[in-house]
Each structure stands twice: as structure tokens, then as C-alpha cells.
Length: 200
Image (cartoon, rainbow, N blue to C red; front, side):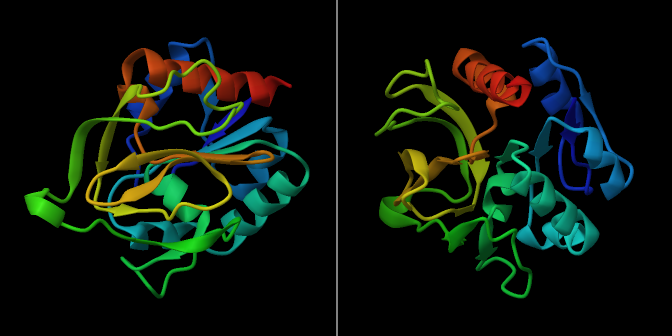
């Protein structure tokens, strides 16, 4: 059972369709206690980092406890940013803090538009369970204005005005800045990889 967290900031329908395409059905927990039966957790999200404040308290504590038990966690787009300590977009809102660092706004260098919307290529510098089978320079779909810094947990990078973390992986914590459910075959491969990790 993979839990899809609904905190009012994600397009849950498209995420469900993406996982359904790889043979996985998600459930949406009504309360943090409903996470106890999960074998994987997905935190999606679009929009302002301030929306993640809805996860403050019991949700954050329960997700943190589940991760501590070894349950795999996947953050998508805003969900990836929430895995970090916070974001300049909403400085008073704390992230999960599973990855050190703060997300910041993409620079508008050389006339590049922000938000960064559309297809862009991944640089995959190291082997990764989440990105297994995803080739170097694979095209995936982004839509974001803020991005996470490159850290030792970075599994893939992308460049739009600056190089940023496009995917992260640390033990059982995973995240992608792009939308795998909208990223054709590479995206479906990533969702399938996460499902395999969740199934053990």
C-alpha cells in the first residue's frame, strides 16, 4: 500500500494515473494514523512552499517516524523541496529537514524565463535506485520557480539559469523536481522503480 498525501497543494489525479500506469494503486490517508499501513509514501505538490505548512505537526512527525522505520518516501516537485530544511519562498515555513539545505529562486540569467516550464534534460552522475534505467540526458517535464541546491544526496541535476537538484536519493528518501507522471517513458520508469522499492 502506497500512501498519497493530500495537503491541498497537489494534482492527485494525475499522480494516481501515473502510478496506475505502472500497476500501482494509491490510497489517500485521512489522518496521520492511516499511514501506519503504508509501504511507501508520496508527497506531491505544486505552487508556493507556504502550502506545505499544512503538513506541520502530526503529519510531519508521522512521516518522519515512518521513514525512520524504513518506509520509502517520494517527494514530487514541491514535495521534493519539502524534503529540505526550507525555502526562501516562505522563510517562516520549515520543511521536513531530511536533507540539509534551503531551496531558492531560479535566476533569470540571459533572459531565461522563470518559472521554468517545459521539457529539459537530466544529468545523472551516479547510479540510483530511483533512476535505474533512465538514460543520461533523458527529457522530463518541469514547472517550478524555486529549486533545491546540489548536495551529496543529489541523484540527478538539471540546468535552467543555474544547476539545481532535479532528483535526490538518500537511503529510503527520494525526490524529483519534475513531474514523472507527465514525463513519458522516463517518468513512468521512475514511478515503477519507486513502486519496486516500496514493495521490497
